[in-house]
Length: 118
Image 1 (cartoon, one colour):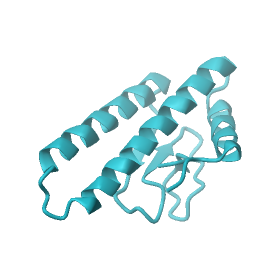
Image 2: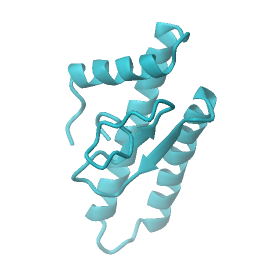
Image 3: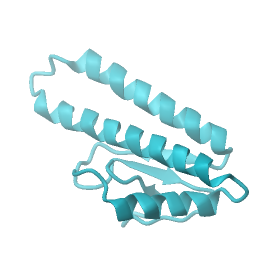
Image 4: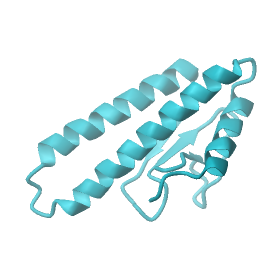
């Protein structure tokens, strides 16, 4: 998947801002950028699973994936108890979706808010 467009990044940041009333704009921007970066890293890890048919790099990929998930979950924990993430290995769709307090979902399955670039 290509890098998210400027419009996708702005829409995602605006969605987060609506879910985080009272937060400063620069904090929301920082968190949105971190989440999008981790989403992109998670997607690349999923792509590497497909590129390694012999599973030679299994341990390395498992460790990398676990670090990404742990970092993203730490950010979401900082946002509050009603935040969560859905991870997918299906590259046809976004591989990371956020479950937000309002219950908003912008994916076909209704799982959550798609992280651009993931």
